[in-house]
Image (cartoon, rainbow, N blue to C red):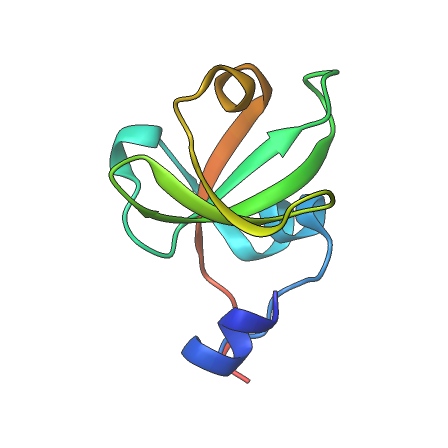
Length: 94
């Protein structure tokens, strides 16, 4: 995620699953704060396939293959059904 390098001077992986396993400390949903990451699976419940940046008030920004960069509500039905976990970036500085 280029935003972490350009805004926060932190280099993190480019793959959603690798970001979760290598660059994040898992956190509970009720601990989410701005710039934490939210992860989603593709329907199998096992594989992380998508990541977004938490904003506030249950809203997060992410890149949609059909809609471009968008802001969605994490509590909407689709995202609650595909939610995998949340994480706080602990990546190394550039």
